[in-house]
Image 1 (tube, helix red, strand yellow):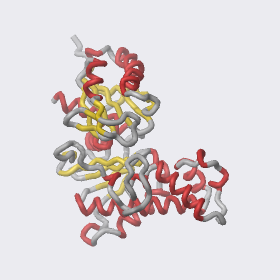
Image 2: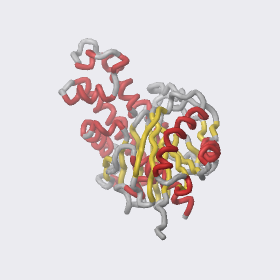
Image 3: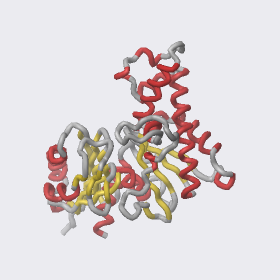
Image 4: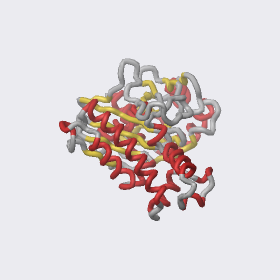
Length: 323
């Protein structure tokens, strides 16, 4: 009698999109899909939508009996309590017992962690950090997430919320972060949202400068728009990436001097800009390091396909739960 293969579900709840997939024990995503994260006023409606998308996948993999559980990575996800707590980039406010609600809906064990921690776990188990015990992952998407690995373990702190590097203050008294009310946080500059804000600021501050970006309405200005114009040699668009890289590089220098990682892994939508972002980031990172830290830390893009790190990392929570 052939033993049936066992699967896990990995779910990555992002500020804009939730991606999910069926993952086998070897870390292969057999099937995946996505839904919006911000179209549902209450989390129960979000879970219902997720259920209707996932049930056909589960049935194609042999049914619930072939699944050991669900792993979720989410903003402000508390690994200890299974709750999303006061996530600034999600519509559902307060404390959301999402792991418990998912267990009741799917009748499967569910484990939750911070979305960036899930991505770090995916990198550690299946990506370019397999043999590293000290590294940091930085997610550059709608927001800026982070996962810190020291001595082969993800840092979660006493309450499950350690490692919120995106909310560290890099420009005291600087740009307003609309969701948190904080001034000058890394996320307000180095996220896709931050790139858009920088574009609006530079276009407003320099009305005399020609730019391809002026062909777009404010609503059409996005990090993708800035990237497209930068590729065409647009001066302001390239200045936006230089400024974003400066902010990010200075921040990474601080993080390096805190934990002395072997590598910093960047992933998320903003990494599609490639060297336009990587080169200034590396330049300002190295320029702001003490000599003892210089030229010791790899700055790399994730080797995993976009979104796969978070899905794989979330599913790895389940394998860990059952080991």
